[in-house]
Image (tube, rainbow, N blue to C red; front, side, top):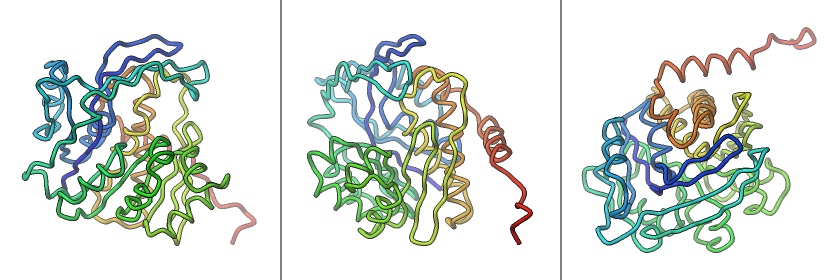
Length: 307
């Protein structure tokens, strides 16, 4: 089963209490692709400028990601984001956002990539997400992400996109804002009422909540003693979740729950180093071992008072 990841490719400058990196490989598509390819063949669709280092292109190929959908705009500059994280790592200041080619250009889906089995519409405008969806044969499962910018500026288009996908992923603050409620469960129910089949709400170090019309599942985050850089954690979570589903034999509830735990495991690895450093060397055996740790941490025998 093949996975197509559609999102931003960036050069990130990040500062945390543990150090800093300048113009490192970033963006939703590389983070998600590196996570997904641990489980299933994965292709990336995105756009960069002429300043995008050839080293990054070579590394993406070496890591086993299909990059025929990576378009280089000869006279353009790559999306650049700079941010500084606070001591608690939950808060950050955006220092620079230079959209560059991302503001004006969106690559078309090449014909060889137009029939993916699984599709992740990572965080871009809902209009562009819908454009991508119109260019592919309907996959077995479509996962989509968003952010507060589109909630504030393109709410109607965002709702249209949500109604067109199978699984919608957002964080807790986005759920509060989009659905205008402080209850995450109420927010999930509203999204389901709009027609999406499954909702996943990320809660950072507090794990995630997955809701369908028939089930509620709470997944923990893997506990870390030190978070070096949380940039890309949500995208690596999504990529691992989708890749794990792609290699599963079914798409039943149990498969989604196992995939969510895989997402938690990979996201934790992502936070251990800056940029894609940890993800680039990660193996499936590493992820499987961490999933078993999460299972051991959360397993308990039935209480005596229960039948």
